[in-house]
Length: 284
Image (cartoon, rainbow, N blue to C red; front, side, top):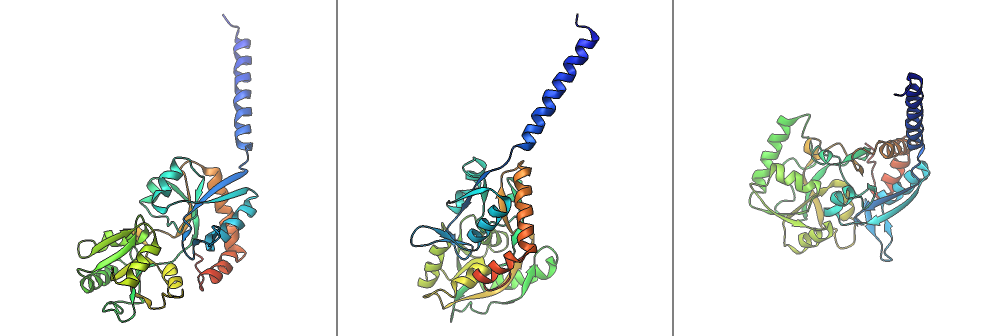
C-alpha cells in the first residue's frame, strides 16, 4: 500500500503536469490563418483578370492580419460550399460578405460585425417594377415588425407572379424565402454575376441582393440601367451585419479577430475602406 505522503506527492506531480500542459496550450500562438473569400461579390470581394483577389474584404483582411501579427493566406472558395468547408477544416475563417444570422450561428461562430448594409431588390430602368411600394424606406424586421409586415404585404402584391433571381445560400434568398416565396418564382444562381446578366437580358424581372453590391453594380459599364426598388430590409432573419465566419469553440481566434476589427473601427480604417469601395460608410 502506498503511504499517504507518496499519494500526496503523486497528486502534486500530476497536478504540476496538468498545469504545465494547460499553460503550454494557452501559450500556443496562432501564427498562420487561412481565410476563404468568394472572389465574385464586388465590392466586398472579386477576382481581377490576373487571378488575384481584391475588394473591401481583401483590404480589410490584410489590415486585420497585420494587427493580429499573423501570416495570412486568402483563398477563393465557392459561396454555397463555404460553411461546410470551414467546418471540415479546409480553412480557418471566412470573409465573403457573410452576415451573422440566427440560422448560421447555429452551426458556426462570427466575429463582431465589420459591415452592415440592408438587402433590397433591383430591376431595370423603365420596368413596371422600377418604383415598388415603399421604395427607399428602411424596414426594421425585428424592431418594428408591424410596419415591416404591412410594407412587405404591399410589395408582395406588386410583384405577385414575377420571376426573381438571387444567389444560392445568400441573405437575399433568406429574405425571399421568408416573406415572398408563395407569391413569386425564385430562380437561384451560383454567383451574383449570373443573375445580373439574366436581369439585363430579361430572363428575370428582379434580383435580390445587398444594397452595397447593387449600388456598385449600377456603376459598372453596361449595368447603368439597373436601379434599386422597394424597401431596404434590415435586422431580424437578416442578422446583425457581416462578420468573420469561424468554427465553433475557437475562442482564441475569435478574440483575435474581434480585437482587430474593433481597432479597425476605432482608427477609421473601416470607414476609409468603406468610402473607397462602396462610396458610403458601412461601419456597423
